[in-house]
Image (cartoon, rainbow, N blue to C red):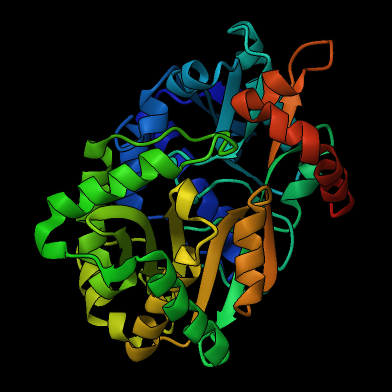
Length: 403
């Protein structure tokens, strides 16, 4: 008999933590998350998502063997900011057994209904990043980039009762064949015409860099970023401290008009090949291999790009990309992944294609109504409802055809 139970004991926490290694044993491209970070999550630490509302961890067992897991919760801060009544699920994993997946999802739905939520969505990221956000629905043959999801090909089939809620794209770039001479000259012309500059971040003055990034993020984050609210300065400062440890300042560029920051771009070395080798264990010696072998890495991931509204059509995104592109090529990297880009970000998608990006991966966050009547777009997307009313339905139907 299949049993779903709330994680409460040390033994159950260990089973929750170790399950992915059982599932992904036959998937050599899978990259295990850092063990110390997952242990912290299980203790309620290191996750703004889990700290912002009630949540519970569940495991599915049959004959004493753990077969699946899920976390379900309510992000009260986001719900309040967006005027939503949403629950979420995250860290979903299951063996290839529909009865297990169905039982876990039904548990999440019941938990959410008991708390009067109208909509359940997931998988979302416990770190409010890209890791664990959405399911990969195609191209299981190319390895995942740093902090990007990867899952068995059978996972999307578990969500037949759900609809696509959000969709994200990833682009691949060959750094030897991306930026044309025309693009380089176009960026130089744009900087002169619109009087802006693009420079590398100053990691020696991390507080000022964090202030610049916070200012741009607050002005630039669009309302169609349905599952995001602008981070606080302190959150960005802590992220910048981590970024300084893992990235080179040549991978972080900031655009300015005079003294005013108007955009920024962040790329990360793709440590995944090394993380895979150390099996996600930084301690006691994994961290040494990670740092010692970083020069052997060949791929970077373009992870964040924000530009304030008044400069979006003035060549700023392209100019920042060109600056970072030149830097990472000089550093010896050969390929780049740009991810993840919202399906609603038409400008960014057009820019990615224009500079030679190959649209090669797609991810979906699924959603399901928890009440009997159909939900309005306002109830699903909050302030972004108008944009989805205009463009979303056709995108919904196209996404369904890919599953």
